[in-house]
Image (cartoon, rainbow, N blue to C red; front, side, top):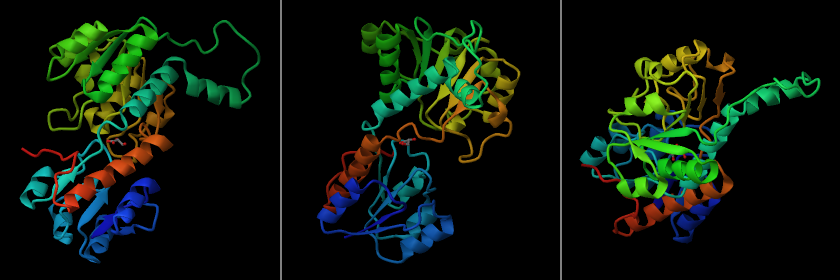
Length: 323
Ligand code: DGY
């Protein structure tokens, strides 16, 4: 069996594939392959499986380049980089890596929330620039998280874990919006369901986005919705950049329509909307919410654990169901 890996990932998953006796070819350059390069690489051999990343746009043309591949195992929980209709038409299995990154992404979400509230990045810049001349009562005043209202948009695994930290760690009140109501969750965390995203945005002090990118969630947060948020509110996004209209957000931050934002994901990664980099009331991290050594290794193993059964004519555990 032959597997193509589109970019170097932690070795643990590669070892699993090799232990099965599979021939594993890995893109030798530590960069995203262009579409042309990917097609060329896939055409080199009759690969049985492809391990791809969220930076690879996978569609009919890519499937056609490697007609022998039964499975494309995405190294991510999100799979908006893959055209599922094309996968269905070509009879290719698609898998993802849910669960293993939940805690890490929730931790990063809180790292961002704390950092923007306590002005950590600004303070770091200030101190390193030698501007600290002694303790001062009004120096870099931030905002407390404790006892505030946390609005979770999308109550999946990650959204629920973020709510858990908010309630258990910071006595926050949780309100949430999701297409599905979860009364067990409400009972466990004293949370309140909001029937529409607008009601949540009006009330939350912190809005944390945890929805997948779908046609229905693209630009869910736009100028109009930002305008109904509290001027003291913060927006955190560790899901997908295009859930927020980034130009509208940059404008809202510049005009202090909301107090601040912290983003790990961007609309046109790796590009940023011009002007964002100049603002002190936004913290930006380069799509690293799942980037811990432990979690990236688990994702690597999970991708391998999806490929192996697929190549043994079994159903992979994290098969994406395509309707
Ligand atoms: C995912 O898995 O979808 C994250 O965005 C990257 O780990």
